[in-house]
Length: 430
Ligand SMILES: Cc1cc2nc3c(=O)[nH]c(=O)nc-3n(C[C@H](O)[C@H](O)[C@H](O)COP(=O)(O)OP(=O)(O)OC[C@H]3O[C@@H](n4cnc5c(N)ncnc54)[C@H](O)[C@@H]3O)c2cc1C
Image (spheres, rainbow, N blue to C red):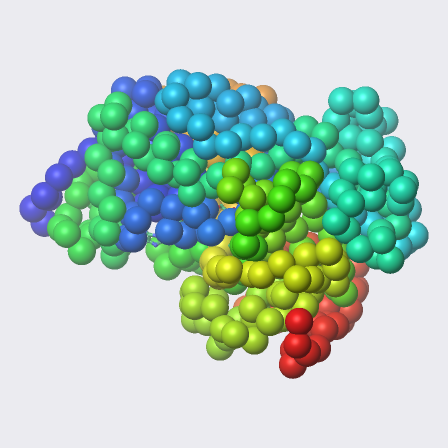
């Protein structure tokens, strides 16, 4: 095959993972080509809520909490540093995030986790995380429905940013440093000979390279191999008309067995809120980024349950995004255990706090041959499912024909999967 181009590395996917890695690798002197089948930020990255979440509100594996914090705290430093380096404001704001509990049971579980995290030195209650009672929670976020709030965990180091702008900025930064950013270029196949990567076939021709990074997230499974276990998940978001300033407080909560998040108010006064979406048809339906009227109505009902004060505020735009979910709710980051030269960074359900950490890992793997950063890479090893049949319990389509990713797996593990029912009336008028 005659190559139309060549590079050290081809990155598949122009979301936050692909663009951040392109930027960092180009700075490190590598010859980088990024292929994005649409435009930068067209996947989950440009459609997400932009919340910066250092740790999950409902993570019950403490090893994972400590490890995630190493990555996410580094990431936030890099987000701020790169914003200055590029001289572009992609709106990193450390506003705090409320993990809202709606009943005593949730509060007990949240407090137990908090005490464990504290005893292991992961969090400093004065700087990082605070437990708030009902009254304090409502003072911090007065738009919440008082009837729903029991208390909360105030994660002070969290916040939000403009995710579409982040992708565009990093892509532009990488291009300025010499990377080739090929938008509207679809990778059809990773070309492998003798278990070794030698290039990619795209709809614009063959590109020869030594390394390929699969950063296609929700689409990563289309390239086969270890990423086949990654399944696409649909999620929905909406934006309201501009309103007067409200505390720019991101939140997450379980309500009616579903997971809701959001709370980013943009500079123009609109609020972005996200919530549960559902597959329209089997498997392929998860790639369908079209939004349906019943979904808009359902999200509206759901959101006004949480924020009654937004009842008369109009929703002016809504959309769906697809992201990738790995059976154990941890992303895959690292070298393929099957194919030499193939790197994977996919399966992110809350990736906005991870792109620079991912870029650092990939950079170390390429330039140093191994990850020298003191992190437990086994948690993210792309090969971890190869000889592990447990993940079959999560196999398509059940239970992921329901909607929400990591939190759903949490409920599933606790035998609460059946509680994931839609509690709201689809036909009710707002
Ligand atoms: C509605 C919604 C809200 C969310 N809210 C948050 C949040 O508040 N905070 C948070 O941390 N996370 C959030 N997420 C998750 C977050 O968006 C993802 O974890 C993150 O954006 C993943 O980035 P990525 O670069 O891996 O994937 P993506 O941004 O999806 O990038 C993958 C890219 O690959 C491209 N691609 C696919 N196949 C090919 C191919 N064959 N050739 C070339 N290109 C290809 C796609 O077009 C896409 O642009 C949300 C997601 C959604 C959908």
